[in-house]
Image (cartoon, rainbow, N blue to C red; front, side):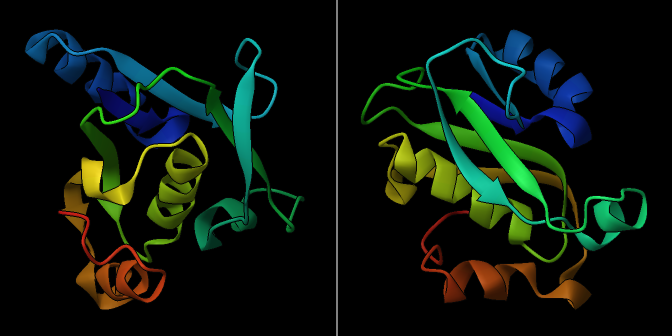
Amino acid sequence: MVVCCEVGSFVYVLVLALRVDLPLALICEVGKLPSPTVSVFKSMSHISSSISNDIEGNRIEMEQNLILSGALVVVVDDVLATGKTFCVVLDLLDKANVGAKDVSILVVAEFSIHCGRELLCQRGYGGVDV
């Protein structure tokens, strides 16, 4: 299963999922997917907060029971910077009964100066392959 956040990576992740013939699961802001869904709170990133009046953040969601227990999942996004987005995505997958041991992360670029891998470790996701 290929999983992506709606904004940053949807265009190329769709092509990737089609190319490798795997289903695609979208993670979107609340209210954009059919029910039932599972959701978690996502605080605003530095970039998002600079272009939005909502400094508190919002919730993201995915369809409930879309990913079967034990299925291998690759989360794809454009950039690993602070790691906050991936932590929230991993929290959401955990809430959807997908364990971190079944998840890998694929990014186009990593800005290591922002210490994203370190945050993943601090939040208990150090075992996730990036």
